[in-house]
Image 1 (spheres, helix red, strand yellow):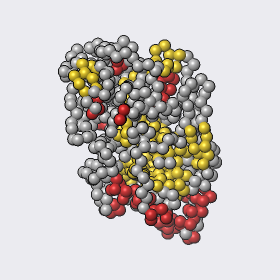
Image 2: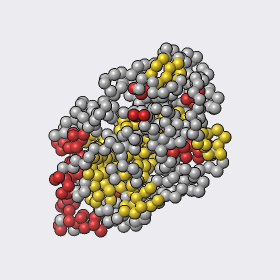
Image 3: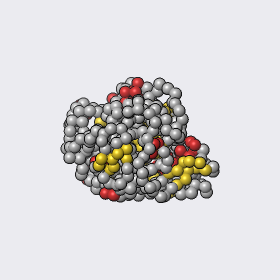
Image 4: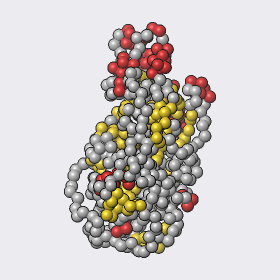
Amino acid sequence: MCWAAWGIAAANANDFTAPHLVSLRPDWDAAKTALSAENGAANDTASFDLLNGALAERFPKIATSPVPVLLPFDTAAYLRDRASGPTKPTESYLGGFSPSGFFLPGPTGYDVTFTVRPGSPEFGDVSYGEPIVVEVSGFAMTYDLPPPKGTEANTTPRDLEKDFPGIRRIILESHLRYSFERYGIRYVIAIQCFDAAPRARRLACRVADKVAVKMLRALRLAGGNSTAVFKPFEARLIVRPEKQSPDFTYYPPGKLIPHTGIKDNDGVVDYTVFAQIRYPIARAPSFANSQSFMNWGDCDQTGRTGRSGSKDGTYRCRVNSKPLLFNEGAKENYDYPWRDNFCEHRFYFVGQCAAGYGHQGQDIRAGICPLKNDGADRCEPYGEHVVAVHEGMILRQRKQEAIFLVVNGESERIRFRYMHMNPDRLDADGILSGQRVASGEIVGKIGNYNRKENGTTVHLHFEGMVPTNDGWVRINPYSTLVNAYERLIGGRGREVQDEPVVAPAATASADGAIAVVPAKIEQVEKSEPDHKRGKRHARGSKRGTAEAHGPGRRHATKGKRGRRG
């Protein structure tokens, strides 16, 4: 049974609203019956307590999951071995699926990831050159969102429908997903892939499908807290400071820089605060705005006019008349008001954007732009700390360019993606799957890494995702960030509507000491985050999930290379 709980915004929250949550009641009686039936009368001693004990070392706190945990665990073989003598290591019962170190149970269900090595005995029919990551989630709570754009129609094989009534196979936001309901809970298997021909370092969805089906076939009841008491989930009240900030202003959500959306669409007007988070940059001031359509930006394949290539050279993007400077340190880049760019022009799948494509997240600059010398047109990276926005668990493998921070709380199930920090620094600092972090804990510094150093401007790319019936999907994090920033600075921002009269942007001083910026940042030797970026696709069915900015990146369309500034 589904239980809907509307979060009620606090009286002083103005336009900000809480998310619409849907609670799912687990049917533990059905799960217990199924556990006994799956393992036969000879194994009538099978119990969730027994399985929790057997798997606790590999899947810590499995006994705390309030929903039945499905894993690719050969429960029947384990119970037979246990009855006849010592059992084998846990991995022997996982059918070739290797635990990644990430397993997060919590009040709203659980998430776990496995890796698959193509060519191994269990996956000899899978042709791909790298390990494949498979996500399995059990949701006791989902977020009610508008239907996503760009979803491939359900193409589930009939033989799966017999074993998984109501199962759906979809491709959404560059992930192949199988979604089904069992024991009252929504379960989703997901693999990042590309709906295109296979390549050496590009996993095609038809190849990923072989792995996903094997995972489906291998799933068995493996644990959970069968005595958990069901309680409907309620969204938290929205908290905003009573005091007005003297200077913080922001444009409304969805109000992009004019004409910078795909097919001239504007953004998503969404005032939802999806979680009460700590702001992701350690200190204020900080500036959320576009990296592609502001000063030094590359206009993201829309074309540009002017620009000599020297510092402070003038140019503009062809989509509008906004004057720009070839200078990343231009003062306008480091000034209010903030500007939403979730659905800004990018060829990445984003189900909540009008055209089905967008930017995927929000770009944020730190409060300073230190320059090497008077002639430099680029900011120096790694000067400001990035922090965890919430208590949660890290999801990241070695060499990946981004961090996922996954949150599973009493009324929040959400994950955040941080990008553009150096993966080697992340590896050195142990920012890897399974690490638990506290809210406000340092996880890195703002960088400009995008497949290489200096691959983009100095900024943090920040995304939010929530669980739905289609699995994890991207949401516009803009209002959530505005709310978090207000609490960081202790003052309520002022929403502005009118576009300014355009004029050439002022520049920062040689050392990047912009007027609103504190002088110097102390040095701290800790790392920064990034997640493995999906390869960008060409237009049509080959578009990917990566997020990138700045001159010099390879364009996804027609094989063109972006021009360097």
